[in-house]
Amino acid sequence: MYPIIELGPLNLGSGALLLVIAVFIGHTQFERIAHKRGGDELEQRARRCAPFALLGAAVGARLWYGLFNWDMYSQSPGLFLALRLGDLAWPGALIGGALAGYAYLRLRRLDAATAPLADAAALALPPAQAVAALGLLLSGEAPGAPTDVPWALPLFGVPRHPVPLYYLLAALATWGMLVWFAPRVTRPGSLAMIYLALQGSAMLLLEALRVDSLVTVGGIRAAQIVGLAMLLIALWQKRAQMGRAL
Image 1: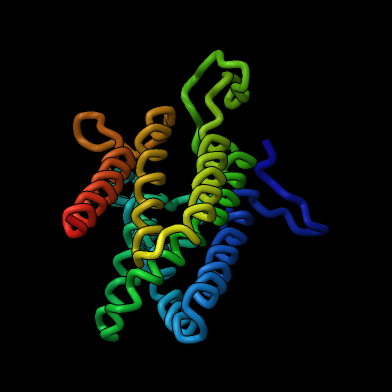
Image 2: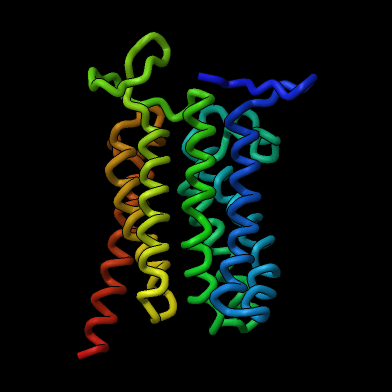
């Protein structure tokens, strides 16, 4: 593991550094893909929507982490505003970013841009997620359960499932599938639903292997609930489309 990356006189946390790079990649890709798929008009809407989506993602990620670590955050509420890049949770970021972006488009009465921008986001997110997952792998975060599989990685003195590596591979696979589907599907919003199905399935399966996953009452992993909801939304939307086609 390489929790610290040395850049000359600077010692930077690998997880935090790669998270910042991931956000930059996701942001720039979002605008580039919007332009490619919808020209200057959609790119302008992506550029105006992105700051609100990023803010919503940051707020959602911190709230999710804080609420599921309430024992610590209730004692120090200032942690909700602290610059702690490790205290962020992906499910909260996804929910917060999606809600904030949707709210912005609704308030600006740009409903027609919602589905095309959702498709652009679906294509932009996987490469950013892959970079962020690499940061988790290098920093030793998101540790997996102990295992004896040949590809286990030693962490805290025990061979464990390399969950960040699984997420990295899942992100790359999702990216590849979406790039393949992109020229083959024409209905706006279809790529976003494919992303939801793939990302939801990955969360549903991989969170079971983590030992630090945020847990709800009864021991149910919160991220798995979100993953299941994402998968069900995608399947419901697909069924609705098939019903309208009949």
